[in-house]
Length: 151
Image (cartoon, rainbow, N blue to C red; front, side, top):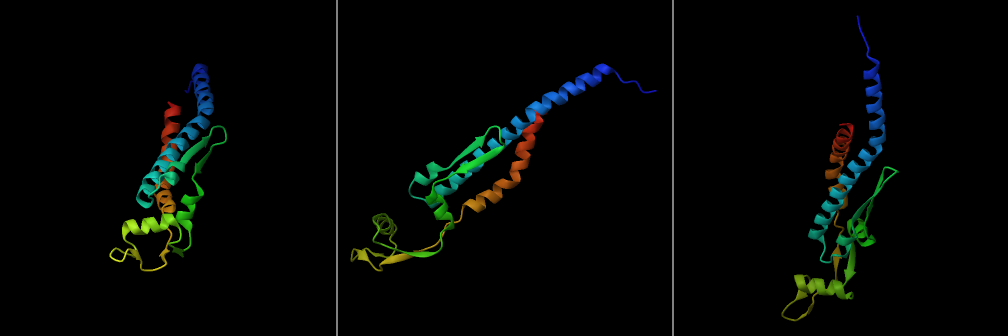
């Protein structure tokens, strides 16, 4: 014989209702944790590629509360650095010329002048590499927050 206590059913339905209310917030919190970690890893990666902090400081994660959407913000220069086509850059631009002098690129120290009129530059892909490392951690992060909400 099987007996079912009505009080147990009521308690179970109350727990389900409580979890249903907490679920969207838990998913948002998990996405927010993952996104902040992803943005932090991008900033660390930018430390190795840039001499200016403007692009690094422009990276931020923004979580939309009710829409379960997260946005990664970054200045255009960071995206251009990642996805630019290989191209020739002349030393007419002061920042490029100063950078080339500082690193001794195409600059003759004894003659104190540039050996060529510019350099050939290539993209520095870092966004996709960091994203591919972070993506497998998204679901476990969300699930850990959902498990916390379930308790």
